[in-house]
Image (cartoon, rainbow, N blue to C red):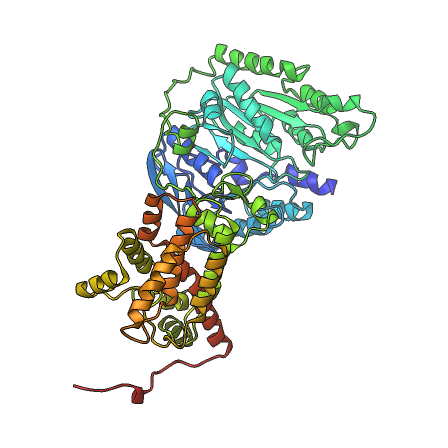
Length: 623
């Protein structure tokens, strides 16, 4: 295994040897959509004054379309592709593949990307990619003149030009580190987190970085420290290099060899972290998979000494690292090898609305008002009552309706009445118009929602929708003190049928059992039944006119709901009027009848009934 590692480390290939792998025109394909790192890339683009977005397309297996993101103040749509192949075909100029897949699938998707002729660089963000898979990726990349950054990396950045994902962190950090414009320092590290620290350090004591790469902390990185140092050596704008290594592995020794062989002509300031490992009695595993000393040669002290002897500037401690970088930079300036960089003021990146609101910088009106439920806390609440309370205290459907419809907990006799109405109105056989519609729709092979809606659309003044009107007219007549005669005859003069009175089947001698059950319950449990008694007196008058003008279930529910609202003492007169006007009571019938309509739909599908065609003999054909 170590022999293979040395073989990989000693190879050079054109993309590395020629220098730059990124530019201001570089575009990437982003695998496995992550909103924040993509938006950070686009914000960096805008900060640098790029004319085109650095993310050309997004690859989300199985999905296609667009994702909306911001490029400065302008909202842009970035194409989403279902496969790596289709994305590469659609964006032939995008030559960087940024892989945010998990460690389980990162190797396979990375290999697919490497095999695309348009892809030159693959950055693998995932940590813990199997070492055997990584070695295959490395071998393929080097054999085909391609570059792998990672695994276990945040990526890399070319100042003022292009960055990968979350490299360099927040916009504030990027601006503080002057990464929006190029400097003179090439930087390479194993650690992504320490890269951010060093970007800041380098910006304080030099004119900033030209390019920075975090090769990743796994045992087998796709590219090595020396790969990038040799590459920086061939970039004219890079005047000095800074290297941050770590204990474990022998990657740093390939850099030692390059220095000894004279392949690096520019100053290298280096430090290998992990010198504290000697303080421990046993071998210590640090943060990265590769950060574990496997012997004296892999210790931080041995590597620092070897780098020092090879000609690198190596301080005596990490605390002196910054001073060593400063001294090297100032020497190059004194020698005239570095000229001062023209400072530019980066543009202001617009803040996201959520961020600005949270920081108190702006205020924005809401678009929806909700008073019945809240899902922002640890658990949803119905009218302020937590879901756990609803379950633990055994709330029923009626209790939930009282919370969500009436915004208060009604007494148990009220919620039980609501549940009775739902049970009694759930279905009325297959022949009524709503059920008939749902049955016909189900037999046409339509889905559940279509079948349900086709039945619900029949609910109205002639079918099931008279509860509100019954309550409205009964209440108005009672409150005005009208006798049943005055009420009924007044309605007749207006040409209005009395809602809640009359039935196609039921009559004086064949009463609706549902009405009787509701009346019996109300007499036993309601404090007052004045509206129901008024409805019964109206029924007595209408029965004198026709045998089928009985109080039907709509009239019973409408009048009794008035008694519930008025008798509970929990609603004002204005609230009662509003409840009736809005249509609460018809809502009760809609909710109840939905149960039956769904049942008829399932029944027809279970029976595998064929398409319904109405028999022609049941149609009167006439001119």
